[in-house]
Length: 362
Ligand code: ATP
Ligand code: MG
Image (cartoon, rainbow, N blue to C red):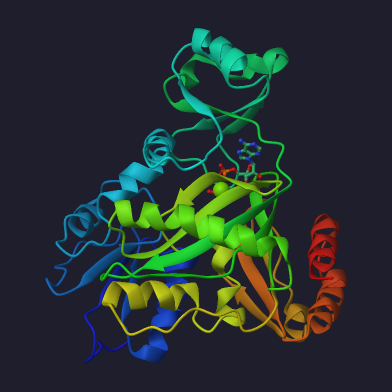
């Protein structure tokens, strides 16, 4: 892409699918977004540039050191704080935001105490580096041996929450402190991986949750003086929300906004970074997002009506996020028909989730 005459270039730490989708979102506005791999050769980053990230942690390389030292690296101090589950949990506690009860785990004795004080069923999570359910162990007294001594000091323990379902709230804070939020998204995670999101406005219980969720994320964004998009994943228990985790970036549970909202989360992030005039966010159509996990590309997917395929061009590996399909239509029954058309084009391990999405639309 040619340099923009309107806006400074935006460099993205990381060149995975999120960086790529930020780049697409910039193109129509003539915003020059350049995702960068960590090992790309170091170059002089213009002073006027803005730097953002599509991930929370990165290795030290000549390029990542230069980017993270740039004076316009947005949210510079936030990444380390949220990338470590210990400091993330501390932040939630400081702000008085409900989250699953937790403790650090530095000795086997502390694990014993955790069973007494936190719960007989725990989720032990790596402080850093876990994703898509990796680096997590569900532990009770009988199988506690999985928590080897090497893990101690590297993990936290939290109460296993028998939640009713999971939602997320994606929103952004602008430089003037104003905030925008999307409608909350209902998510289905399987084996720790987000697989489906559903969004529509006729879920009556969601309106009270929407207000509650915004009251949780807003003070976090404010306290961090954050600029750009952040996602908050929550467990829902009855009428109550517990924050599971925060992601200081565009998020998989916001991918539906590419088709079903007036402004996509990727464009929203760029607008916040550049402080562009932005209307209220709106859901334009009931939407479903289907993550493509470990499946070979299938051109037949392109036949599904009212759908938009994003294929990330990565090597196919089991359990890997390789793409997603957004389906959106003002008439929910058309979304259901499209999901039914997609169903035979996906393997057996998708079927329960497709049925879940259809059930949620009804
Ligand atoms: P992501 O890919 O979203 O970053 P992650 O691997 O970092 O995920 P979490 O979001 O903490 O990890 O957990 C993944 C999923 O595991 C959750 O969405 C939820 O389904 C389940 N899970 C995590 N913590 C708990 C808990 N305390 N109680 C019950 N289920 C949990
Ligand atoms: Mg998560």
